Length: 260
Image 1 (cartoon, one colour):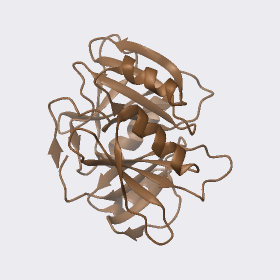
Image 2 (tube, one colour):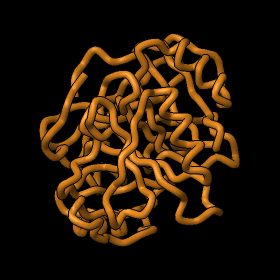
Image 3 (cartoon, one colour):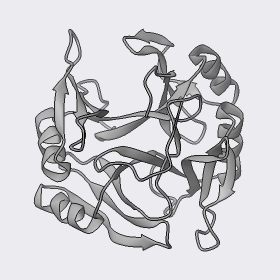
Image 4 (cartoon, helix red, strand yellow):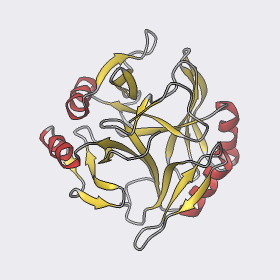
């Protein structure tokens, strides 16, 4: 378990949020599955809620702004200056879905499409730093980009966030970890996903830690979710991919042994 009280270093995937059609049903699902409690994001935040574990924020859940968009978990990357990062997004072949704007005193953000068409958020912390607990049951532990165009994706994030990569390719899988510029710490991944269905865009995948993956997977199904394959072993522990009742997909994996 790791608790965070200061801003995350630039390029770190440090927050995830979810827009749903049925907010009460979404709250009930994650409260049961992970033990989340929900508090208001502030008096001017509408129905946006902060999911808490042990009194600290771990994710955001709110109603969709547009009912026509897919139900997905969105990954946010930390930035020291959202406006500068947003300009780099455009100059590196990406697009801005929402240009930089202030979110009360919580921070400043933008929404973007990267050069391979994957959606991600950019967050410059104010009073809200992002995830305050990570790497424990029910909390964020990993974010990875699934892309058909591995080289273009890596080039984009190195240009925009000045990240480097560690190749961890093994038989049957082309993969690299993302190293943030501050200290070279591995904070995310890029997966050359050659098995993406034609109707599935390149996307960022959110992984939550579980202290008992088989039990969490079983409970998810009991709550109306679908497993996109059986619970399997990986070099990082047991894992499963879940499609929640409202359609969002996320991974669950054994609680990591490392902190932050």
